[in-house]
Image 1 (cartoon, helix red, strand yellow):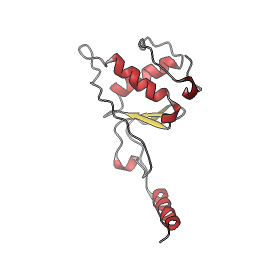
Image 2 (cartoon, rainbow, N blue to C red; image 1 turned 180 degrees about the horizontal axis):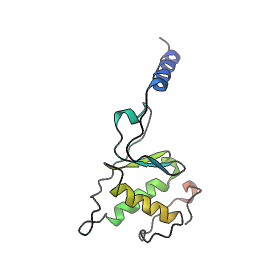
Image 3 (tube, helix red, strand yellow; image 1 turned 120 degrees about the horizontal axis):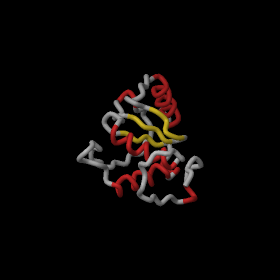
Length: 131
């Protein structure tokens, strides 16, 4: 079998697979998505790059996310070289919700969530970023 035939068969298999979106899947901004932990049916066979950030739960009143870690996560989200990008935690609620709140603030929302500065390379800054 030629490499081209193998590529065509692989593409046909991908098209025939049922893809189920992960829990709490939504678009945050063009190229940036959120969800709970992806399951095997929500991950088509492709070249998705993964970057893991170990973030503690954000449960009041005793725990809050590390501000430096949030800044690092936002820097990855705001770099368009990383798009398309899916950010997720177990259920896509607390930790992802906090990060989404920070992104929303950068989009001009009136939320008082984001206070730690983030460095964004202007060359790779997404067009929807308002800072």
